[in-house]
Image 1 (cartoon, rainbow, N blue to C red):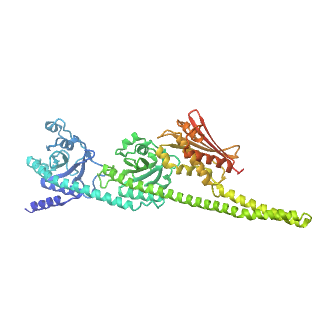
Image 2 (tube, rainbow, N blue to C red):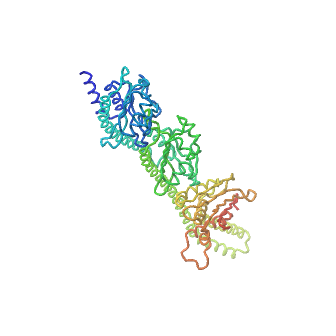
Image 3 (cartoon, rainbow, N blue to C red):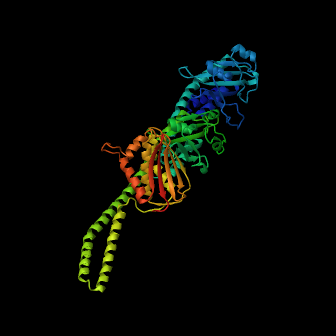
Length: 595
């Protein structure tokens, strides 16, 4: 009586338990004790793979843990798989007797994959399916083996185990619902926690590094990576932040669009999941050996990546490597849930990246506006000074002329008049120089690294390049510093690059940039080239409108005229445009010294 009461208490615990691992331990212990078996194991169906995975067993030595490797059966494999496929119970006197197995079913084979440790070889076995409430799905398999003192399981044992399976199926379905809700709540808490790191006012590198650390910990992975498009080339991806890898790899690992999972995600804008190590070979993952060498497991086995997508623009990727199982035998690869919540996070990251880009642009515009306001004020002041001083200077000159005619016979006075006239001319000349200086574009010339100015122009046009799908390949040679006004030449480069993009079909196209020394090292040459420029004629008409051209000219026409005037007048350099076969070329040459 006391034993029956104890079993009833165990059954109540089963119905009240929601944690899956504890529930499995209660079920196998209850079934073993009710049938007096040597060992019991339970296998549950994985909804993603359809395989039946070991979730609980009494077949372990005291103090031992569940196998770290995933023990699973496909439908039809071994005794467990046979029960799962046919949805029927299976009772065997001796699992080693092939004749007995064939008498039961022709397709019945003992796979010897996993046996309860406490069960002796060749002893009895009984297993039953765990069916869903509508009996349409086999949720799992509950099996026992090794009857005490060499006894066999009979029909009543099979019926009792089937009754236990029917009872625990309700508890299993309740536990699965609970696990789904718990997982959803954990993900949302994780997203809220990571959201605290997202701030467009923080340095981008610092923010992304903090995010990868939180994501890696929250999603339980060995590595988290964020790739962004290279500033100087939209067709190249650069590792910008990583957790689980050395900092030395940040900025070093790269791939091109279309290469490996990262390049595929950027090119198509769709997520990628890899669940088997063997599948990695189909993707040709760049740097896979280098990355794997730094992972705790030393193996690159699973992957999920989502695009950092803002509208139609893909800024980069957010990637996870090697899922860490929450418990022994649990999944070591990523699920659709992982991908779904990763996509939610990627949307938030994209919004912050765009906000940071907007704030930077706003700051640049503010600085430029302030500088232009200062230049305009300075120009107005220079004009007013010259205007206000013109009349007094004219009167003074007239007085000097009159005095000179009155004092022709007094050389001493004439010499003093010469001094006065010379100083008046000098003051007039200085005022004219002040006015001319105020009218020049730019502010203060400094010694500048020309390659940096080219990179800044490419960064400024990054959004437009990505929108047009333009790829840029840049080759920077070592150059001596130029004495220029960076803002002035920045505007020239932006104008030239925009004109070059007008020569390309949208979307797509390639622009090649090459900086080098020329004229025996006396000048810096920048060649901006489009190997395939089908719309070069359009650019020619913008630069040099033909006779009878429309009255409303493109704004780029005036920007080109200003850029050329700046290069030739302010720097005594040259800016040329030419079309050769199917290619278009801009050539900019600047002397190392002004004049």
